[in-house]
Amino acid sequence: MGRVVNRTLYLILKINYTQMEGTIKNLVQDKNFGFITVEGREKDLFFHANSLVPGLAFADLKIGDRVSFEEADSPKGPNAVNVSKA
Image (tube, rainbow, N blue to C red; front, side, top):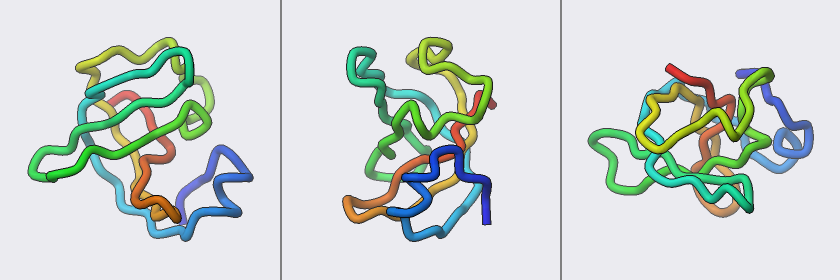
């Protein structure tokens, strides 16, 4: 099981981690969330600032940045967690 940054996220997500890499496609600065594009995958993955690894600030991310992350299932579908710069 991967390390979970936000305890609330841990409690609501069904843990099913898979290490992946992708590219930041969109950032919504005022709401602290964004989307990651993964090559060969039809849908982008949602991530929230709470899902970043310790030491990485949401403001440090830019569209086009390569990131690594783990995928976790949630009631609304897959999310990226433990997001770090690749």
